[in-house]
Image (cartoon, rainbow, N blue to C red):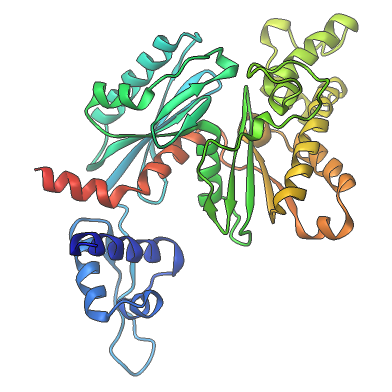
Length: 396
């Protein structure tokens, strides 16, 4: 290993320590925690201060020795741009290094056409780039629809949009903008934001399940994301005699419990029962409207949510038996917006599991709401911020 590689690893270790592991640590505390020498720690922290990633607070005295100087993330210099395709809209954010939103923007896309969706994405990225204050991390975080390989940045397919062919969205962005793109599934991006900024500090093994027009999720083991396309939570087979899924399987969770499945069930009931969901016009029917009515106590809307709660509870129970998470978080457009849906899932899961399992698992509601996936996409990209900043400086 070359000295430059070792210095980068040590810099990343110290930066992570300040960001996540310790609360306002001093150099001495960092050296003790990481096992690095005090001299190496001092040299690296000074470098991180110089490039604007961390800063010193006022010196504090805690004992009889030399007073320590607390170190924290510097939120005043570097900004990051993230975006995600969420409920038919590209949502864009500019965030600081702690994920706090400084500016947002959105572009609706009333089409499933790949070119129209990609063109809107490039338009929005260029707009946000031109409005980014101070220094911009030289890259974009992208929350894309469909089955995404985060290493290649390719969308292999997006069943809810009818996309069957590979879309090299990372390559397209980089060619059009000249900047690196870090691509992740949109609901996995929401999971990144949820785990990082939601109140889940007491959980180490977690499953995030995002429910929208599609269903996807993220598994965290010992608080580290399991980043791979080899697990597809939305395509667990819940009922081998169930409806056909866009992926070609029968009875997938996505085919039975996504927003599309919810709306299709509601339309069938409206056809069978005149007056069903009478408060909603057919042309206004969508998952958020149904969820909102259910929160108000509408019986028909609650019937619809109960319909998708059954397969979702089977999926959560299966995950509980397979990997025994401390916590399962129900998010996405439907999960974030519907207390009633999460309560329904929780009650059914508790009925499926054994008493000792119920004592060891909690089922909670997502908190990130509308711009969560874009914030998560920016956060996903920010994991590489040190290398991006150093490479950009070296290129100048």
